[in-house]
Every structure is written in C-alpha cells, then in structure tokens.
Length: 207
Image 1 (spheres, rainbow, N blue to C red):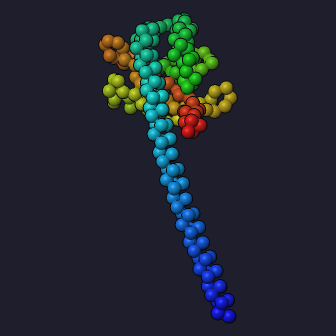
Image 2: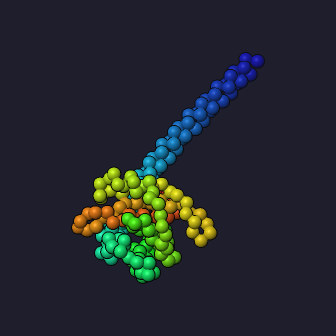
Image 3: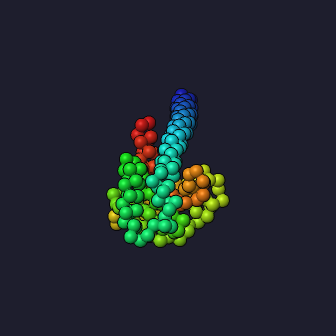
C-alpha cells in the first residue's frame, strides 16, 4: 500500500516536472519567435522605406526634367497665344515629349500638364495626349502657398484605364518660367500604385 502511494506520488511529480518543462520550453520558443519576427519586420520596414524614398526621389527628378524642358517651357509660356488651329500640333509635340519621359518608366501611369489658361494636356501610357478644359484643383491652391521649388504627394486616387480601375499616387508641382520665375503652368505625374506593391513584394521575396 505504501509502495503504491509512493509510486503514484512519484508519477504525479514526474508529470508536473514534465509539464513545467514543456511550458517553459513553449513560452521561451514563443518569445524567441516573436523577437525574430519583430526584428525581421523592422528590417523589412527600413528597407521598404529606403526603397520608396529612392523611388520617389527618382520621380521628383523626372518632374524637374519636365519642369526645365525648353520645349515644354515654350509651350506653357506662350499657350495663351496659341490658336485653335494649332491645337493638334501642340498635342503631337507634347505627346513626343511626354512619351520620352514616361515610356521607359512602367511606374508612370500618366502625366498631366495644366496651363494658366485652364487647358489640361493629359498623357496616359499607351495612349495619345488629350486636351480638355479644367477647373482649378485644391492641390494647385495649396502649391500657390508653397515655395517655388515645392511639390506635393497626393494620396492614391482611382483612374479609369482601358475599362478597369487602378489606384495612382500623384506628384504635383507648379512650373515656373526660366529664368523669370513667373508661374506658367502645373504638372501632375500619376504613379502606378501597383508598382509600389511590387517593390514591397520584391523585398519580401529577397528576404
């Protein structure tokens, strides 16, 4: 009888020891896994942030190239004097110019030039340049209050393109005449948000 009690007590103690060992191992492993996961997420976040910064710096450089392009400067500075019969010629000229800026860059979904006499010239990848009358937008008013070198990044907005909807982030800035620095138009570059997603996916795969 005494031996049976001792055996039962020994088994109970053994179960308790095994249970405690398993719990300690489980929580220790969970803590290590969480620490590793947080560390990996922080690394990915830093890498993604640096890549996006580089990406946006590149887009900003393109906007400055468009800003200072002599042909675009000439069209915007003299647009009020352009007659209706010259509209097709202007659109064709802008198509060639904007195509050269956008074509090698799959992340650029479209480029829009807005004149001070409220005409918008819109180039979309794989399309022609369309001209239409526009009403001043809020971002243009905000840019008026900024320095002449300033620009804004607009949050993603939907745009219809070949029958489906796509989210685009936009970089916008005013264009000033060189060297007089009076405003002659505005620029809006639409950035394909899908390309930003590919950056994130690429970083995930790289790790």
